[in-house]
Image (cartoon, rainbow, N blue to C red):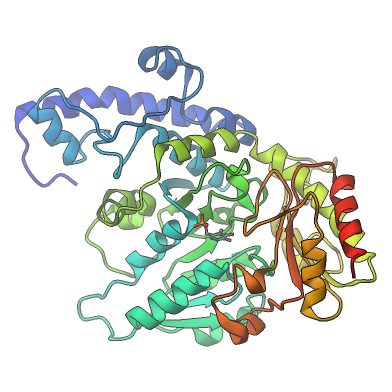
Length: 467
Ligand SMILES: *Cc1c(COP(=O)(O)O)cnc(C)c1O
């Protein structure tokens, strides 16, 4: 990064910062030896760091301050040139957010054989925008029209972002894949001007899935990155980097911050990523999340509020055991619904009947678990959906009958929540797109929480009696 000559005063701070960098590297090396749960609980916040810098506080401090003060002009110059570890200004970086970023980078790269870096953003949507935009810049001597290829089974907001913000407003060609599990459909639409492949797995609400390894290989054979939204899986159940994915995005708002007190997003990238987009900065390829953090994100401004990062950090500590519990609860609820005559279809990747079950079985396992034969046990998360027989009014009647389950456009909660996507999350995209994405008005999306599953089943049972 350093092509400019800096004064001896500035270089003194660069020299001094080497100690801090070494300390952080040592803590990183230590964390990499830990199991998933230990990383989730401690991350990079060590006893040493607590005692030397944070009055011994055993929990990471919440820094709400907007900016950092410097000792003199030399330190200010070193910091703003990114020559020393610093946080400058909370739109660029913040110490609390820093702890969350590194714990997520470590969890997402856990047992993948790769290193990763992470950028935390204000929301899942801003993480998605920050992840795709750097690949959609016009290149000198590049083609007039560029495209990207994406599954059409997406969160409603992502669909709108691609269809309206990218296609209609910016003239970028969006090539939709209707059956993401069919690798030939992807192959048929990629060309020289494709900038990346994009997938959501499992998708919200349809729970589509794809052969992640084959998609990563396909992307790399064209020299482009494979980007995946793994919000519904979380790193406790799937770590796409292990299968070759370049960039993973999450809505931290969902299962990662299951307590429901904060909105947030994360972009995690493998070091390095595959891309043919030319960018002068070495971090672009070597550590994409850090590149985005120090440059486009700084200039675009979707910074996470430190308090929101704190809520995410607090919830992520129990991610693995929580995903185990809610996955088991969801399985019990899905089995109950499969036996209900008023329900004509249950979609849950954990059900052996589900056509995508074999694919999900390969990729969705509870990290650090053991089935007794040395393999990890399968867990499929807590998102499911079911379709109520008869006209759409029947689904609304059942939905309106819930007494404990919350009616909300939300998911990933410690509490069970349900919505009708056709009239909520997927309302804006119109009937035709909903039909193509298989989101009929009879479909109720249910995300099962950590309640005793018999109480969730009892609530569903009394509501189904209304039709
Ligand atoms: C909710 C959601 C998003 C968007 O996240 P926000 O935090 O609401 O901006 C993106 N992807 C998936 C799969 C989601 O469920």
